[in-house]
Image (cartoon, rainbow, N blue to C red; front, side, top):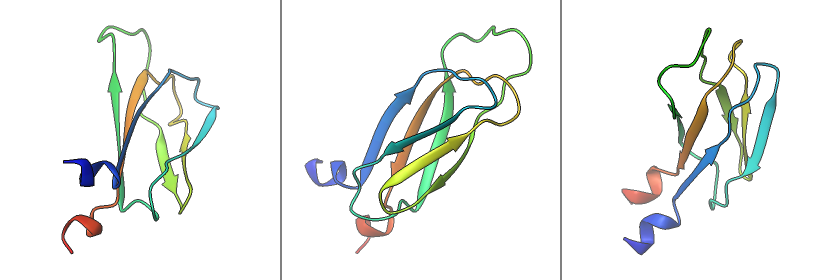
Length: 85
């Protein structure tokens, strides 16, 4: 299981308004093959809720607002092809 830790980065990002762009370093050895963005927290938030869209490169993941208030989100970045080699 320790090997998987080198290819998966997981973190929680606090809620943000639609115009906020959040960038963080993922610590993975290469560009993630995919990023899972999932809302967490209270189910009863007022108004429209949007999960941010993402872009990733070899060092960072960038989240951009989806046009409405975002809840707290869980972000999991994965380098999948390294697991099946």
